Amino acid sequence: MLYFAGPELPVRSGFLFYIYFREKNRYGKSYIFIDGFNLYHSIAKEKRFNRYKWIDLSELANNFITKKEHIKEIYYFTALTPWSPDKMNRQKIFIKAQELKGVKIVYGEFRKKDRICPLCKKNYKTFEEKRTDVNIAIYLFQLAIQDKFDKAYIISGDSDLIPSIEAVKILFPHKQIGVVIPIGRRAELLKLKCDFHMKIKEKHLRNSILPEIIPLKDNKKLVCPESWH
Image (cartoon, rainbow, N blue to C red; front, side):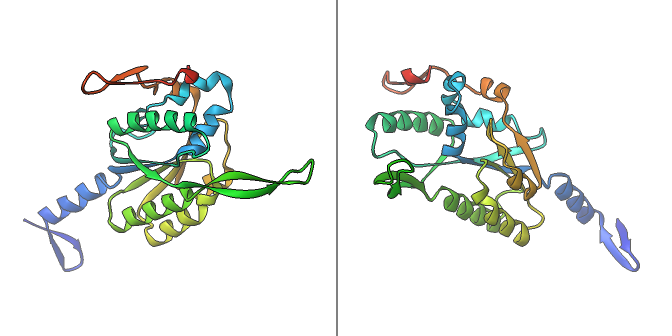
């Protein structure tokens, strides 16, 4: 059977079905990009949110997708803290718990940086997290070029991500990019540059807590860090 899409332009019914199916499922493949420290510090700043540090990132992401979408991959961008073995150990436990849920980890790094004390005007050294925004930009570009996603969700309130979002939207206008803003943050400029935006609320965190004890093989287990209760 033939249909006519325009003057003297016959189109087979199978082709029309393909176009219909493609448009109907256009935004079915979703990828999640999580700015680890941006999310963590939004939770850590409120003492009453302490237990939400033990968050299930895959469950959190599922709070924001529609029923027609399917999360293909979740990427968690972070860096280990070299100056604190205790913090690093908690990070590793948390990261292992996420990997068990299928989350992919992308590491940045901390670098030493000289700063000046605003009170005493003396120089001191501190650590600054590097490469998270660059890594997110790289993965966003690579996956867009490979046509891996139809819709990208970026969980962050960092305006440094704006240039990469703008560039991807120019080159791939058919792809939707949205931002999920961590609790307690505003990110007005970031919202303006995205196709859609949502806000993490306490109810989303409350519904996304990992089990306190996660069993592993050989009678081993992962336990929520005591300081996160």
